[in-house]
Each structure stands twice: as C-alpha cells, then as structure tokens.
Image (cartoon, rainbow, N blue to C red; front, side, top):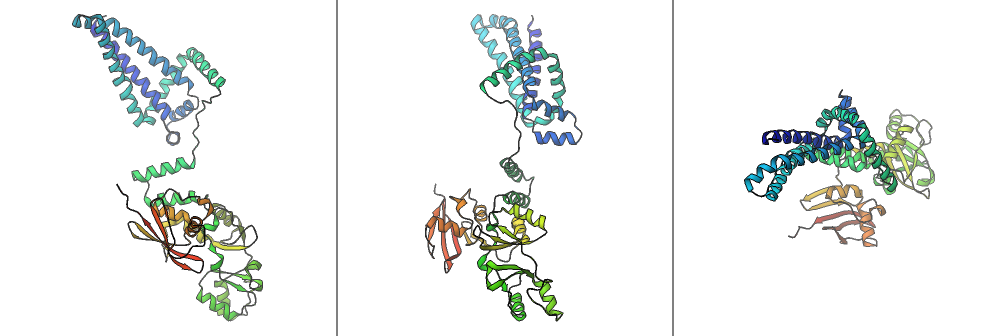
Length: 424
C-alpha cells in the first residue's frame, strides 16, 4: 500500500471516528427539556433522540463496535503502510513503529476524539437530531451484534443489581440551579428570579413566619358601642376586625369589615357587631400549614382572611391574602416600613419580627444554625443566647455579629447586624 493510499484511508477512518464520537456525546448529553421544546416546534427527529435516550444500550453498542473497529484498522494501516517509510528514514524498525504509533494516535486523539467531542458538548441538541437517523440505520444493520453485546451487558448489570435506566426527574434543586444560571447569564431579570424563588419558597415557609402575631391583633368585644368601634377603626385602618365574646380572643364568633360597618354608620342605620348582615364567619387554620397550603385554602374557600391557632387551640395570629402575596412579590412591593434596612455595605438594621428566610437572603448567607427551631430573627437570638435577650446582647456567627439595640419589655424590636471584614 502506498503512502498516499494509506493517508487517504487514515483520513477516512478519522472522519468516520469523528462522526461517531460526536454522535455518541451529543445523543447522550442532549437535554430532555430542550428536545421536548424542539419536538413541539415540529422537529420530529427530536422524538427519535428522546426514544434513544430511554434505551441507550443499542447506540452505545454500535458506537463502541465502530470506534474499536476503526482504531484497530487504523493501527493495522499505520503499522503496515506508514512504518516501512519511517524505517527507511530512521533506519531502525523499533523507532519507526513507535513514531508511527505516536503519529496515528495523536491524529486520532486530536481530530477524531477531542475536537468532535468538544463540538458536540457545545451543540449537543443540533448534532443529536442530525445524527439520530444515521445511528438508527446503523443499529438496524448491526442488530445481531447489538443483541449479543447489549444482552450480555444487561445480564451482567442485572446480576450485580445496577439499574441502567436513565433518570431525568427534575427536582427543586435543579430548577434553582437553572434559575441561578439564567440570572447570571442575564436571561432572567433579577426581579423575575426573585419572584420565582419566592414562589418555590412558599412550600417551605410556614404561615407563622408571615402572620400578624396575637399581640398586634385588633378586635372588638360584642358589647362594644358603635362610637368605640368607629374610633378604633379610624385609629387602626384595617379592613377586617375580629369580634369576640367576653373580650377574649379564644372566643371568636366572626369578623366584621370596616367598610361595611362604617357605611352602615354613615347611613345612620342601627348597627350591632352581632348583626348577621355584618358579622361573617371566621376561617380557622392550624399554625403548621405552609404558605402554599394557605393559598390553596383561600382559593377553595373563597376567603382572604384567616385566624391561626396552635395545637392547644390558642389563637396565635391572623393572616390575609395580601400577607401571602407580599411574600410572593417580595422586593416588587414597596412597604411603608422596610423590616431590613441596609446602612452600609457591611451593616443592616433589622426588625426583630423579620422572618429568618428574609434575613438569610438579605445577608447573603447559606443558612443559620438549627433554623427549624425558630422563624424570626428574634427567635434566632433567643435560641443562640439560651435566655430571654436584653439590650446589648450579641451573637457572632459565620463572620456576622448580631447585636440587640432595642427591646420592648421581653420583645426584641431591632437588631444591628454587622459583617466582619475578611482578613487576608
């Protein structure tokens, strides 16, 4: 065989090996979601790729048979056709064989393996849909060989108890990773990223992290006069007020809407808190519900206001649909008083009742220790101090200093959080 003929054969073998190598990586790494989108847009070959990914044994067998056959054939050609010319050049058979092996192997590594696979990694889906039909044809041609090798591999995997079924289940962590990558690439805006993150967070956050706590509930006794009710409604402009017997929150009989009550007063009608036209039944929910479950409850009942009770049937707070949606909207909603105010690049003023999830996000932390044991930054301080906190008490954790700067009786009203400068 002449050197020119050998060169042509080696070129053909390199091209064939490059096609097979790129096809293997593209078909294996093509993303399921992207292929499904391509299929919906009319690319029928994307469905073939998806079907092949479900049962990859056949095309892997074809690829390995083809690559090994090409490699062996290239070695034979290199040894029989190229080595004699190199032997004349070097005058040594061993040196000629070594140089021939290095030349042929280097060409295959560079042009038949490295470059095609890098190209396939960056264009997996387009290459996969282009090569799937030829691969199906080769699978048909080499069906007997595939049956032998694939059957033997399946039997061995079954004996050692290893599953080879491809798992493409999408988890919440996968979605978070995709969102983060999209935000970094600029595909998803910061506000959109924050909104999607909040929606997923609703499944993890409990209703007590958002509720208006018991001490802030404004309610009326059934015996309150109209003048007293009007005065409170003017001073406390809420939409809904609970109505209780014996001035006790554990004896709630319903709630009244300020708009309806004040409208009746302005029309100079005889009004009473127990009037069935004004008093509406209250929705009670347990304090163990997640925000997503609360939203589903509001949707199924048509309510937008609920009373939260604990396992001892004690009222711990109230929540409205607006409270839930404020968590979803997050930074897109401007509050009159921000619970977290950044003073400098390394310090924040934080309200004591701020949910711990909001604190973690604002400070850029991964987590706080044993966060399942508390829901607010005040709870974090009490848990870490192991006592009733007082002014000037502080906790240091993960390069942050949490210092109490204001209290009201036993309640933490404000903290100063400072991040230490990194010392190199």
